[in-house]
Amino acid sequence: MQRQLGKLVEAVWVYHMAEGISVDRELILIKLRTDTSRRVEVMQIAQTFRATVIDESPSSVVLETTGDSGKVNALVEVR
Image (cartoon, rainbow, N blue to C red; front, side):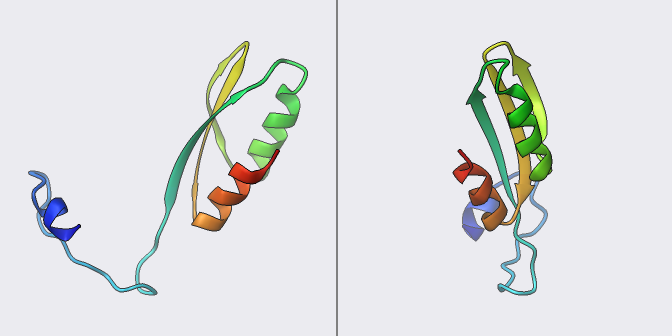
């Protein structure tokens, strides 16, 4: 992976950091099909996970959140 990142024009240098001394974060975008009757529930869940509503339409909502893999996986598992 270091070689691939080093090929980027914008990369000044690439340094591999050991686990424990770096911060890992994941970004997820989730598109949910939902109607107006469940929209409030989706917004409450989004607020619980500190997710941001990126887009809303009459039939769907797109959420964005960042965090460690536990947080991201927990949001995905909510039904």
